[in-house]
Every structure is written in C-alpha cells, then in structure tokens.
Amino acid sequence: MADPMKIRASLVGESTEVKVLMAHEMESGQRKDALGQTIPAWFIQNVTITCNGRTVLSAQWGTAIAKNPFLSFKFKGGAKGDRIAVTWTDNRGDRRSDEATIA
Amino acid sequence: MSVARGLVALIALALAPAAVRAQDSTADAIAHYRAALQDGNPAELWEIRGADLWRQRRGPKQVSLEACDLGLGPGVVRGAYARLPRYFPDADRVLDLEARLLWCMVRLQGYTEADARGNPFGEGSARKSDLEALTAYVSSESRGVKMDVTLSHPQEAEAYRMGEALFFFRAGTHDFACATCHGEEGKRIRLQELPDLATKAGAQKAYTTWPAYRVSQGELRTFEWRLYDCFRQQRFPELVLASDAAIALTMYLARNANGAPFDAPGIKR
Image (cartoon, rainbow over all chains, first blue to last red; front, side):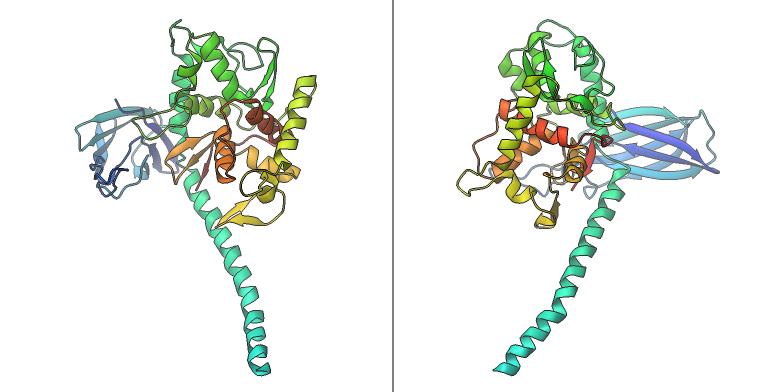
C-alpha cells in the first residue's frame, strides 16, 4: 500500500492555503532499466481535494509530474476546523486518502 | 605577433570578471532552487515512515524501538541526534545514530546483524530502507537543537583524533584525502560548492544539513551515506556502515559543528 501523505492547511487572510506532499514513484514510462527494458509508466492520474465534502480541487495528472509530488494551492471559503480530504488514484488503480483540518 | 598576443591578453582580461559573475549568479540560482524546494521537502515522507517504524513492535522479539536508549534515556528522541556520536557504556563503544539503531535492532528487537544491515541505502518504493527512515525521524527531532557533542570519555576523544587523522589521510589510486576537496575555501565539483570542513563554519554548515533528501536520487540520504559516497568518489575501499572509521569521521565533523543549531533533514540537489 502507498505511504501516507503529508497535508498542511492553514488560513491565510480570506483564503485557505493547502500544501500536500505525496509519496509516489511517478515513473514516466520513458526510462529503461539496466537490461534495456522500458520501465512501465506508473503515475498518479486523478487528484481530488474536498473541504467538508465539497470539492475544491480536481486534477488529472500525467507523467510530467516529479517523483514524490508537492501540490500547493489556495481556495476561498474555508474556515478553521474544516476537514480537508485528499485522494489520489494512480494508473495501476492504487489509491490513497488522507485528511487534515484547517489550522 | 605581439599585437595578437596583446589582443589575447585583452580578451582574457575582459573575460575574467564575466566568468566570476557567471559563477556567482549560478550559485545564486542554485540557492534560489533550494529555497523553492524547501517548502515541500519530501524528506518529511521519510520522517513519517520512520516515526511509525520507531513505535511499531518489530523483529523476532516483537519489541518497539521506544525501549532504545539513544543516550538521553530509553525512548528519548528529542535532541538525541545533536549529541551523537557518543560513548555508550552498554556497547562499550562510541556509536553514531546509525550504529546505535543497528545495536538496538539486534539487541532489543532480535534481528540478526545481517538483517539489520541488509538494506542501508534504499532504492525506490520496491526497496525502502528502514534505517534511512528511522534516521530521518530521529534527526528531525533535533531540529533547532544546538549541536553539543562531548569528548569527555577517553574513547570519544580517541574517535575524534582518529576521525581527524582519517580526514587528512591521503590514500587510494588518486592519492586523495577528504581534505583534498574539503580543506580549502571556494572549491567545487562541477557546480556543487564544497564546504571547507576543516573550519568550524564549514563543518557547521555541512553537518547540520544532513540527512537530506537528494532530488537527483529521489531518496533521503544519511550522513553515513555521504561519507560512503565520498569514499567511493575518492576510489577508497568501501566504507563499512557503522564501522570505527565511519563513526570516527562522523565524530570529527559532528564535534566541529558544535554550537550550531541542527537543521535537518534538509534538501539537496
């Protein structure tokens, strides 16, 4: 199973700043191993972030995102104590969900 | 002929300051790159995994490492890394963190020496290193704590003396010493600036920023890995993990870093 994410969410003025660190290989499918065999692509495809169940970010990712990706964004309408839930799904069908509260 | 030579000299004069400027701006750009990465340092992923491993009951004896004494009492992690390496009476030896973790994994958790040492340097999600994760967690608990390595025990003083001797010892096919690259101000390998580790400021800057997430490898690396890889680059024999030599060099550099606030796990290119 995938390793946990590190999520930080804090109120900055009127908006909420969310920072997410995900543990993933993000293999591009362009690399070859020592035997010359192509290493198959393996990457996060969908990212969904909700605040108290309401979707605030939905993204489709490809192979051009770095290993162990870091995602930072802001949205309006969050309040202290709201639950931020992050879910990613990769192209092998593996998924991981983690939560944090807005500080 | 003399005109041509004069022209060459003029061009050289004109180019010299430009070359210096280019190098400065490159160093600035690298500093900027590091600052941009600092915010989302993936080393935290290793810290989380290490904290989990620290608390889990593991090994043949099903014991958690919370019974492991890192020098400040069993289970005390906060500030422990800033005081290592140190002499441990139960082991009757000076140990750095990696060596102490191995000692606890063998004596407390019942792993064989070979199992505990099995995978010191991880490679991707298929071959994760527990030792790197544990080192990341324990060292993170010393963030902001001032380095305070003592030489009060004779074995600690001996380790420091041996580390200093090793630092300046020239050997191998290239007649290298650590001091060849790290004993002078302003040296670099490609674009990587090399700290002068023989000075207090250089040792402080270097020692307090390891372990670190290496962006080029996508892995967290420990201080022992840094020494191991420097040995490889010098074409020395392989530096054995937690050996007297590795611990002595760590002792020399950790002691020289005394007084500086510890600031790792960091992030490096």
